[in-house]
Amino acid sequence: MAGSALLDTNIVVAGINGDRAVAGRALVEGLYTSAIVVGELRFGALKSARVDENLARIARFLAGVPVLAVDEETGVIYGRIRNEHGTLISRREISNVMLGFMERILRHTKTPPSNDPG
Image (cartoon, rainbow, N blue to C red; front, side, top):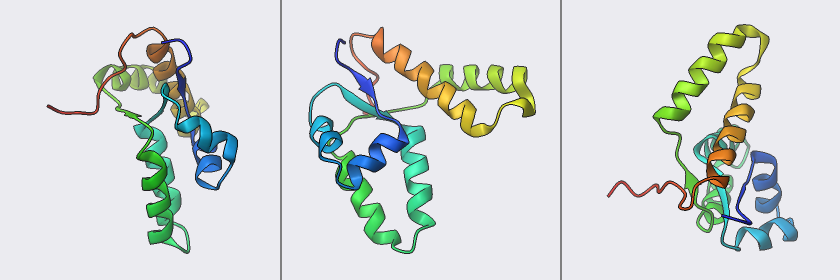
């Protein structure tokens, strides 16, 4: 999967806000984001003054970017990290660790996980 990349929240926000470099690359096959990023984006939109507009912008951007699901293995690793580090590590830091883990999986998998339940 040479050339694959997992987009984090900051990069997706830049693309949504019109950063041409990000928006253009998002159209290239091999770019993904995660369900965690979708959650962060939606949280931000729901807290904004223009909820409907921002939710629509997110949906338009994500229409061209596959979203990798968080699966049971991801949950197992999250639980282990949270147990080992407790309050010494924030939930945001754990999310970043999980994104890194998902990116490693993406690099070593020929076909990324599908969000298609069927």
